[in-house]
Length: 453
Ligand code: ADP
Ligand code: MG
Image (cartoon, rainbow, N blue to C red; front, side):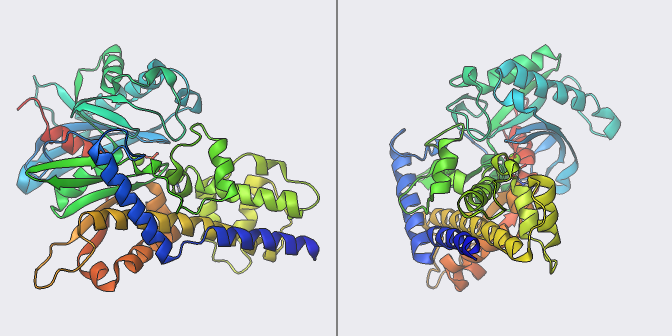
């Protein structure tokens, strides 16, 4: 029928616009390298901030003692503690707890946000003894704080917020010392603890990777947002750089009208363009926008646009539909019904919806592979060198988009292999997932930068 043809035309058009052939991805990687180099030369000369993390000592395994971490990412926050036993015993014990952030606190005041978090941290610390952790008496407890927003570090344990990203927008905090705000809240709840390391999730994950494997050279986050960090060796100095790659932008990125509308209606229009094509906060919304256009322009779901199509589709619901292996696409049917209140969909319609999910996830996964390829190429780790034994370059990954969205992570790994070629991919490049890497890594950095030695 005409309606169906029109929906198929929208689908086909979208597929073409989202296309990421390997040549295009190589151009994206080269543009990323240029933006990295520009950002390293001077502050503000690139959309990539290339922030110096001020990490002086990546953990090696010798660290000892009890250390805490607080991981504030984008959706939930986690509190963790690890008992480190040094070279032989390594991580003797670890424990974590998760708390949610009421949406109102994401755009309220800093006192409210940090008050909420400090309260949970206090509660967690109070259960320390019951759980068999041991803290040396007379010493102040130390915390690694993972704060995953762009921060200008003043030292390893202080830094000012440059801007908010993802779902946050607390205006009075921009330009403020993040650790100062947390310390005030910690004091207010009567907790005796100091922040020994302020990092973001990429730096934490890199540290977590290093603790196990000295060949880890970079870390990538695929969660609510996306970002990467790597170890930069120049002359005699080693610096760990937080790229803030979410803000990457290039004419080579296959941006569609749906991406542009998403950006325009976001909390941070014009910013984080790469992130908005890749990460968990946005993928489901892109799918929703395409379905909305099919509903409006092609009467795909009947004469009217289902009202719920104007609200939200999460990436986890998108992922559930995308992974539906039943012959009648039962999961797609029930998600449509439960989440979008659309019933009576035909199998053909459900197939179209899975196809939209596939296009969006594939594009995001392939773009993130291009970013990783860019880092490897910049570091000269993308080719085999004749007659040398080469150490592998290991990339540490963390984030639930990577962990829980199989089709996304498989596509990303497949694409990286395509970009590197089989020989390089099989021999000198490796991707390792570190669960809770961003949090545990912050505790490890608090340990390697401990002030109570
Ligand atoms: P962060 O630390 O940045 O908050 P997480 O690593 O906890 O990020 O990931 C949370 C994000 O992962 C959510 O915003 C959501 O978009 C995405 N996500 C959660 N569960 C799934 C899933 N099953 N499939 C795909 N994406 C998911
Ligand atoms: Mg996280």
